[in-house]
Amino acid sequence: MAKRSTGPVGGNPPTHLIVFRERSDQNVSVLSSALKVGMARATRGRSACAVLKEKHGVSPKVFERMGVAAASLSEDDIKGLKGNDAVEEIVKNEIRTIPPDIIASDEGEDESPVIDMDPMTAYLQGIRDAADLALRFRARETGEAEEAVNESEGTGSGPSIASLKLAWHLRLIGVSKYPDLTGDGIGLAVLDTGINLNHPDFQGRVVEGQSAVSFIPGESVQDGNGHGTHCAGLAAGPQDPQRGRRYGVAFDASLLVGKVLNDQGSGYDSQILDGMDWAAENGAKIISMSLGSKRGANVAASVAYERLASALMQQGILIVGAAGNSSRRPGYISPVENPAACRSILAVAAVDRRKRVASFSCGKVDSIGEVDVSAPGVNVRSAWMGRGYKTISGTSMATPLVAGVAALLAQKNPGATAQDLWNTLQNTAQSIGGVNDFGAGLVRAPR
Image (cartoon, rainbow, N blue to C red; front, top):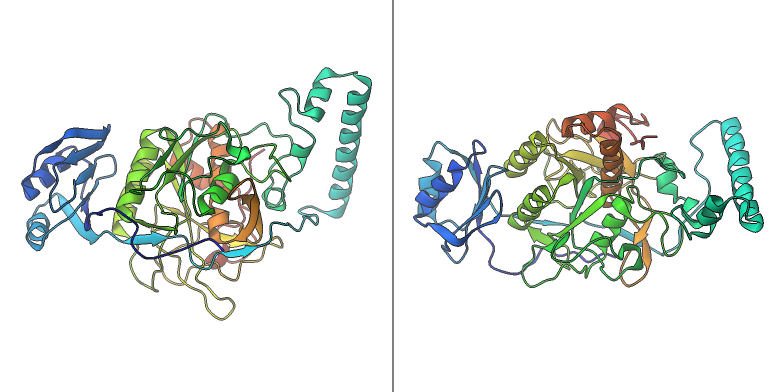
């Protein structure tokens, strides 16, 4: 069971987020004047992130590309800022967590075939695959085709035979055994509990302090939970894992990992915000976030996340979020959680191998939180702690799979905007049921 906590997450976090009406470099001056503090000596940790001098024990940050700031505010500070026309809203800096009740199971995986085609097509494809495999082994034995030998033995640039085996969740969404699309050149960020830097499947994929950064005070990017590693693996795990079937979608994507949740699975909005800004600064085209908090029916979506997600979408960055795991179907369907309930975050529901909605998957129960698409999220295998793997369930698993498919689409369509990617994910999804549970349907990988 992945560890989860709503307790303290370290450091001295800001008390509030300030949402500005517009993205503007003038927002730095607005906050500086209101708090009566100047710029810190290290004014910019990133090109569009300004740091002010410490007040109330915290150095305020202004994320200019997203039109949001994080600061500790007194009652007088709040009154002063609310009177400024540049400020839209001030909200508390809340804690978000791994979606509750992640269902853990043994490492094993049910690998019975997933049939997503008529029986004759399945039969013919089976013959084709068997013939192809036989020819590869024949080439290896006779030396007739060096390229085929390299592929079958994994000694050249081609994939090994083991890599041609796909986990059920990849087959269900149409990922190809022989892909032309791999996510190559696409920045794909996973913001979660970090990554297991020591796992053999991620050797050479990320560099701590560069493409893998922690935003949790006192904790390195090394994943002490497992959840972040699992999600990173589903989004961009290797074509040829150390053990077992291929489980990751965009294996050639430029993987970015931000640790925004601590080893107990909790993080403040300000830390998540920092991670999103860092990902945008470092070239992310897609950001995957399997985190959130419960939202009651007809309770508004987070205004802060809506502002920053819409701002990033305008800059070509798609945010993919987990719908949440709080339902107890069929008796109770919980609303899509925050921040996935925001209209500018693509909300992902979970389905099982038979394309049935997962019992825990949140759904549309009001006019606020929509389900946008669905993906496999029940008994899904990926990398974990140590050198191992684990099979777990949750909309957390469905979300990075969708993010990986988005990376394939971005590679296929280099000029696509974030809205283009969103539209294509929905337009190409396979309808498998009502929109309240599945959104547009099951995502499909491009060919």
